[in-house]
Length: 118
Image 1 (cartoon, rainbow, N blue to C red):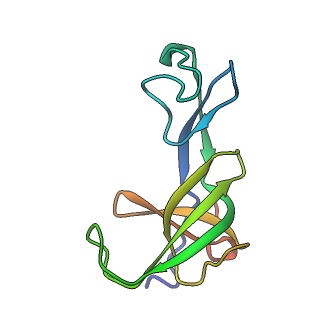
Image 2 (cartoon, one colour):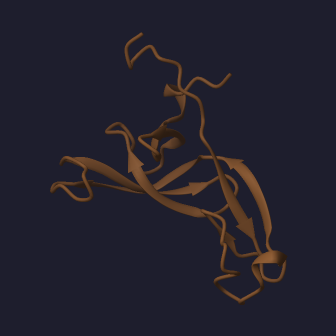
């Protein structure tokens, strides 16, 4: 199978939620709440789909961190609440529904319809 026909599945990510102030974090905070300082042992941890809305997407025209230019980078508001910043496929633009897939031990957001969930 080539990349165009290989089924890809929505990645799940671990996030934390502070019961004191509702602060959400991806990845899950291991040092405590960033906002109120609540102890790490008091934070709720959950696994959620890396699915949401691309709020802003830019094209980066110089290589950074091993990525060949040009590439797309975006701010994604997950359906579970937190904002994440990650690589995006070339077709993703602001306002697009996206899902995250695994890419070389990282995450890449693609247009929702391009990903087949089992």
